[in-house]
Image 1: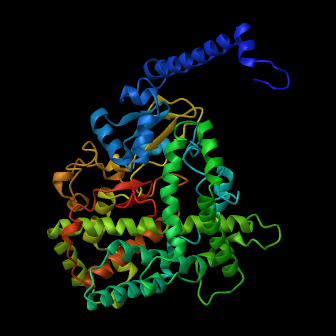
Image 2 (image 1 turned 180 degrees about the horizontal axis):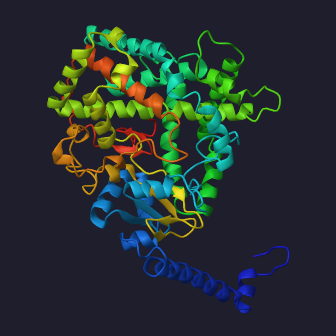
Image 3 (image 1 turned 90 degrees about the horizontal axis):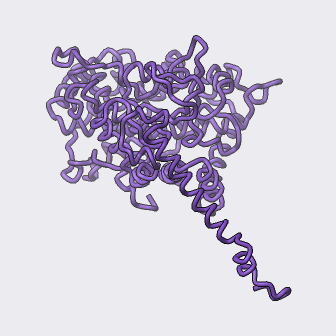
Length: 508
């Protein structure tokens, strides 16, 4: 009722038939959306890809799987049922990573083929609006990669051997002190303390001192919480572009989330600025970046300070927890398979008596060590989901046309649990990497934990040095035993890259 005019608007609408028209329009819209979904599921260009028909009609089932941390395992089950290509949603395809699938989705392009860009529904723009290696244009990525790759070249990393060994020594001291105190050791935390300290030292010329304090610093806790929050955001954004845009705006207005976001970026920026204002006593990652044309203060610099901040944030997420997760998974499976633990210890202790004897060159020549680490990455990939791309306008995957904008990915865990690629795929069998004839049919090139193509992980060399050095340090000096409560430790829910036993714990 309008008190000023005395007009009853609902009566006016009813008298003029507009009310009924509105209802009819709403019903028509709903029928249109339902009809379009059904057409897409049964007759659209993606209808030829197998998968549950409910998944082809609506994104809700996958949204729920992501929210509950079961997306990776659910995708494994779907691939086992439907094959190497599965339709996970109305416009979402997942592939088992045959070499051809890796190449067609992520690989270098030629002959007029366009790169499949990062899926904007999954990846977020850097919080400071600057380009970074993860989600940026092809031109910006190439420009940054040319500079940053020098810091992660094997020649540069070998100059960091003594620094990395000093952190391996700190890990050894940390474990020894815990043992002398009669404490049970959480190896996940021990590995995370180490990898975060290493990356902070390499990036900022100053560690976080977590091995000294035996606890996560608030900044790292914020990173872990951000990973959990981003999983929820990713799930809801998967429902559609409009919903995704709304959710981004909504979440950024939640004080606690915005506070964590600003704290993370503020802390990163402060550390980068402090590092750039000094000349460290030893070369670090930023030394090589500055030497290679990345000085933000140089005349006509093409690498502004904001990009340094954005890239440092990537280093502190992508080069830390993932390496610790790989070490944790490999250690767990070695403990669950004591015959391989003994074989590896025999190889390592036969070559090294202590940390002081360990050299990078020698570590790369140990076949059982490499086999166990590769099998650990296969059984427990640090990023078990797939990093999605948006299909380009001329996207072809094994001679099958995929419509532009379709979300496409190689699902890592589904790839590594595929019997078509790996015999006894659900078993920890390092001998597959040692030429055992039983596994002659394995497609070993399907293992790509660092992805492939022009946007693969720039820190791959560093990760391998850390994996070899830290696992060797632990097993040369200590005998480990799996706690009874950790027997089924691998059955965890997943936050994008964080295998999280406390998935449902809001406070982490």
